[in-house]
Image 1 (cartoon, rainbow, N blue to C red):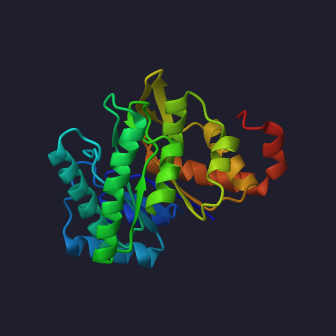
Image 2: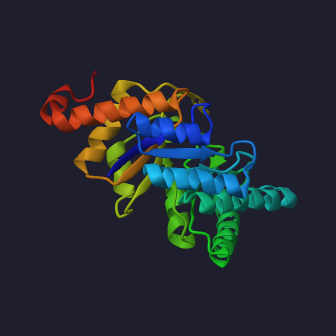
Length: 270
């Protein structure tokens, strides 16, 4: 199954955004708590009920101000609270995945940062189980080498903590300077459902600078591998026009399904 939708509501507000997403033929949306979890329980329940009625799959992005490996212990405590606040609202909305950027190396050895973040994640998972929230933590592949979160680290965390991961293909490109889908999907083999982010991206040798509109060729390249390997995936678009680019992806996907031989010939060079 391929589910497509935007990061956020395109400025419409969550309820109106969900209705528009349904009307244009998309089926997913990531609720953005970018600068804080400022939503009442009642509103979360209303949004969740609407999404369920319209069959829109929801996920949540926790606030950006998170560092589970901070040198300042009070910042770790605050980071965990932000994640748990997002989890509580996600549970009320019926959103499964709670996405976040886990932390920074800050010049320290990678194995040390991994151990710190692993410990904090185990504690978060324990709290989620105690609260009986039906959500899954999904630390995200990050776009800079200075940030914790390459795909190998996150897959190891999945194995050792019980969390999932969010595979951000644009961040992978920015982080590595290139992207080998055969290698990436080989590493992800065995994951029943992949939660992913995608968009165009501008980057330097230091990594991500900013998200861009998603080019047709980039969409086609990704979809070709998804269809070839019959991958079950949700793709949340984070471009400056996330609804438009998600719809563009839907249109290209339908064209590829209807004319597979034509896309084989063109090999993505649109």
